[in-house]
Every structure is written in C-alpha cells, then in structure tokens.
Image (tube, rainbow, N blue to C red):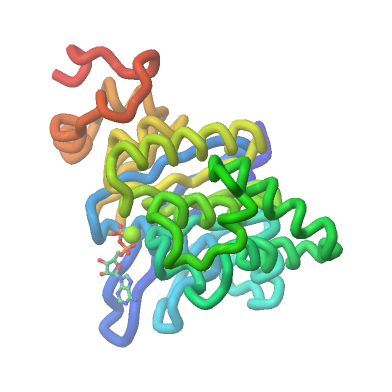
Length: 273
Ligand SMILES: Nc1ncnc2c1ncn2[C@@H]1O[C@H](COP(=O)(O)OP(=O)(O)O)[C@@H](O)[C@H]1O
Ligand SMILES: [Mg+2]
C-alpha cells in the first residue's frame, strides 16, 4: 500500500459555545502527487476542512478526530511546528486574492517573505521570486514584483498568490476556490497554469470549489460534501459517470461541464442521464 501523504480521519469541527457544526466525521486521504477535488455548495464545510489541515482554524473552533501528515498528527501540534510546515511542505491558495495579499507590500516582497521561511540568501531570493512570477504566467515579472496589489488585476493577484503557494516547492497545495473571484476566461487561463505548475512540481493538491466543472477538470478523485459531511467519494470519472448520491446527480445535472473540462476528459453526455 502506498504511504498516504495526508490522512484525515473522522474530522469533526464545531464552533463556539453553541457548538455549531462545521464538519462532521469527514475522512479523506491523499497520496503524493495526487489531486483530490472537494465539491459542495456554500456552507458545506469545504473551507473548514482545509483550515483544519493547515492548522488555521479560528480560535473558537474545536476540532476532533485526526489529521495526519506523513503519519504525524497535526491536530494539537504546537503552532511553532505547524508554522514551519506551512509555507514549506504545506501551502494554501486562498479564496480572496484581495484580502489574502498585504495591500501595503509590493508583490515581489510578499513572495520573498515566503521564501525566507526557507532561509534563502538575499541574492537568490530576488532571482527566484521573479522566475516564479514568470512561471505562473505573469508577463513582465519584474514589473509585477515591483507593484502593489491594488495596481494588479484580479487575475494577476491570483497568480501572485499561486506563486507564493508554489515557490517553496511544497508537497501539498490546498486551493480553496482559487478562481471563484475571476471571470470565466481568466479563470480558465489561471487553471491551465495551475494544472501545469502542479504537474511540473509533482505536488499533491486538495482542490476546493463549489463548481463541479472546475473541480472535475483539476482532480483525479472527488469528494462530495454536503452539510459538513462527505456524501460521495470516488475517481472523478466514476463520480461523473456513475454518481451514487442524489445530491451528486443534481450537481452533475446543473453543471456546465463542457465549459472547463478539456475535450478528451469530458465524459459522454449519455452517462449523465
Ligand atoms: N468562524 C466560524 N464560526 C462559526 N461557524 C463557522 C465558522 N466558520 C464556519 N462555520 C460553520 O461551518 C460551516 C461550513 O463552513 P465552510 O467550511 O466555510 O463552508 P464552505 O463549504 O462554503 O467553505 C458554515 O456553514 C458555518 O455553519
Ligand atoms: Mg469556503
């Protein structure tokens, strides 16, 4: 059996005194280099699951269960050790490119800050920052590095966030609705770049979206979440062509799969009937 990179077992997260349930008994796992898509409507527990893996849950959250990274338990790990894992082995592309970037700091410097976690020497840093900005598809990477977030378009900001997430060559990149804020054509180009960069780096990816077409395009396997629970899991092909849960069937019926899924991976339409 291949060693699992990430193993989430019976994760339960509740919030505050009222113990509002965010996720309930969620289990999922990822092997090295694998891409797992998490799909579900707003409020289904996708972000809470991601934040639990990253050790970034808010103060009022109470997690239970187990989140193992290469066999080591992350729940309850001291913040100092977690912080070292984040940005080196584990990284995350957040949903809101505007709020995830520091408005007072130039883009290049923000990527450089992530690199500093790896204690690169200064000379190397500038070179790697610019090269990384180029690799995520930004033309004129020197100019972008020297710009503040408000001087960039939404698509450019999302690419800067992607550069920050990838620059330390992490083994797992969590992408939480990375293109939801972008219009459809920009979204497609950003996803192409992400696809390419993940393939090149060999990083595993937990790809989260409420959009089935987007998740299907990016992931080898899918987990369908609803009301904080996993209602269906399987290979992308299997889930799209032979969904077991009525909720999944509903998602498939309303998804615009042709818009994002590349032709060769588009399941035949009869399969959805
Ligand atoms: N900070 C919080 N305080 C209280 N409840 C929260 C908080 N964050 C999330 N929740 C609860 O967890 C549920 C799942 O949230 P979330 O994972 O953000 O959904 P999504 O699938 O849209 O990412 C929400 O419906 C809400 O009830
Ligand atoms: Mg979310």
